[in-house]
Image (tube, rainbow, N blue to C red; front, side, top):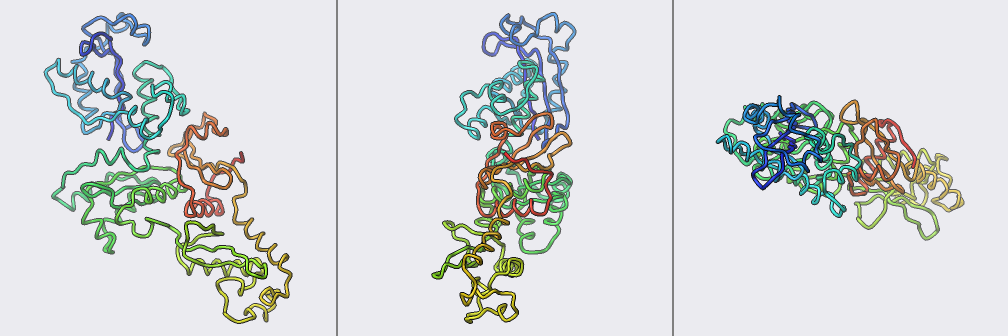
Length: 452
């Protein structure tokens, strides 16, 4: 749980300032759970330059509550929360200062979106809130007022969480405490989980041990914590905490899961650490000039027509292609080691195995197969569901390579490359990601595609 905070102050000497306005959003799993916004009547003068910057003048605060009158509400809305602010050192210090004047020790963990942005989005010209959100295409209004700046900080924090592929934010805040009552702990974890589509992260005392995705996170976690298979048993013995991110879109959950398993290498994700699809079908040219399709374990330096989870899946697809494109079995990995393929006598092979069919004609059918396996467009964005009704998600593909994914609000345009890159969470293009996206588009699960 996070408390996104912004405060405006009177200005003045260090530790002599006072809060004039505060906005707090209690935030969890991409949802605002509660909010508190208030002007505050300080016990000192507002500096003229501050009034000019914020528009807050002393006569505006005459009927506003003093800090001690709202202190209890601030404590309650931030309880069990990590304070998140842009330049958290200032906002958090101001809260602690105001509470110290009341004789109360206000203490919370904190995160600074300036530091996070420098880490996750390096090499920008400026990390001031106004410049940063403009560069990233995040809408902002009421600049230098608590509500406007807190809203922009919240949107920025959401984007940083998406870009945090190595889970630096979450890892720095893992609760290392050990719960005694196992059954009640499982119930609490299950109750905490969302029923939406997304990616979840299972932790032991110190690190992520398993990453998964599901259309219903609660149902999947319930399965992990009640099943008796080997993997579930290990999860049950080691689980201390779960964190999840709703994605709205199934394809983003699939791509995000694949990328972050490779990034974080969780010890219980046995199969997916290196390649989700370890078997590939590769095209080679034999000494007679005919295209051949070879089944093999994926090699990082080779390119493949398609990739599969098992050799059996690859052979099944190969048989389908042989029938659909009228190919010769002997020019594939199904070769029966005989001079003539089994399909020749059935007249479903034109004799490429005997070099009776012209190699150009045969290879042309292979080229049709290759074209069918490509994305329909070279460069495009695929639009899909967002995390709420006012949002859409997108996956960006450039020259047949997947560049990443992101989200945009419905009242903003996303069709220009500049706008896309501002919102983009980059992922590595590889055979796994390509196969995941290609299959998703082929089955028409997406909303629509925009060619660029």
